Length: 291
Image 1 (cartoon, rainbow, N blue to C red):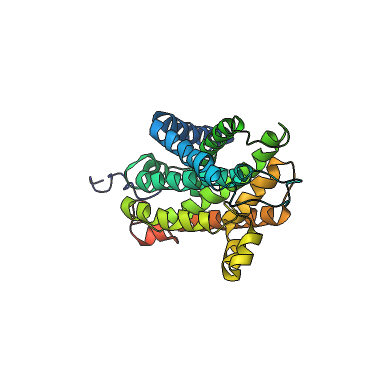
Image 2 (image 1 turned 90 degrees about the vertical axis):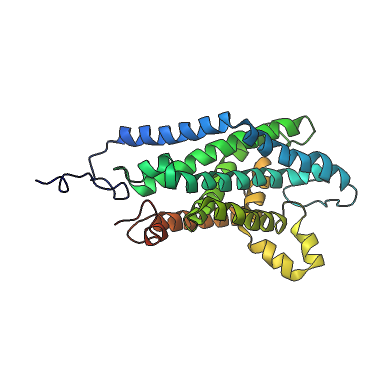
């Protein structure tokens, strides 16, 4: 046998499938979540920026516009609420939006030269690796969201009861999964880190401002009907409303359906795109493309 025949397979080709136990799947997912958590802990600037950004909106923007942008009695509120209370769910969703896209930004780097380059050619299915990466990002976003809620509590921005901090957890998980899956699907399109970073701003700010995060939809409808339709079909709007109702122990069923459906569609698109035999990464000749 020649040296060429004995040469190992290139890194871009998946390794032969082996029998992987259920425990092996748990270890793999736990390792990815732990690695993402350590990265978040060590990058203190990332935590501070994720926390300071919504707090600036809460302490400065909301305080300045409290008298101008009053909020009527709308579900789930049973009485008039301060403007700070109204925008709090939108700021929580903004934290998850930034975290989901930043996590996908690191995915672009890891896919080329990082640990994900090795994992993508491991015996584990790619859909499982992507789901593990998604779960890791959601775990980090939960820490950021509850850190914001803890600070907002001392600003008298809180639900009616302490149970709201528990009932909002499923909504935070679902919205985090949706926004993270959207970021993963976007990361499959871009091969270079700089291209994806530049596009993030064109996604984050339109989704945030064209939603119910800062003002109720009925106010938008009075100002511009076309913009109201855009905000109504914005998935970020439904993520905000899902969190808003969950803080008060209620379920907004339309938002639940939209967040679940859009999140599942984005995840399926990401799994397809990261498939080297059919997806975009294989066609572009990336590190996970079949040769």
